[in-house]
Figure 1 (cartoon, rainbow, N blue to C red):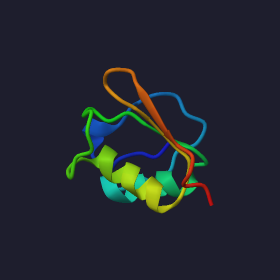
Figure 2 (cartoon, one colour; figure 1 turned 90 degrees about the vertical axis):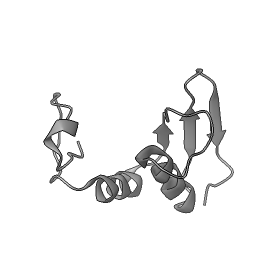
Figure 3 (cartoon, rainbow, N blue to C red; figure 1 turned 135 degrees about the vertical axis):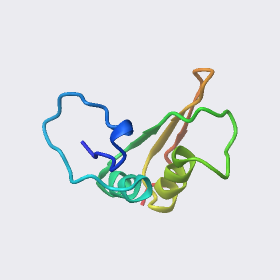
Length: 84
């Protein structure tokens, strides 16, 4: 589990591994680096300039990793063409 330095953001759930706490963006970069496929669930139907989820989606695209976005209405968008 990639923990946040912000105690209020911690999930407090069972986990097999625990990484050192990082700031939001550093944590998100670490998650993208370790992911084989990214599953993202933003709260907005359209891409936003703000917000960690959309920034993480952008990092995933830049890393050319497979991405599945689950939108608030339940629709999905898979981006497999970015594969290396």
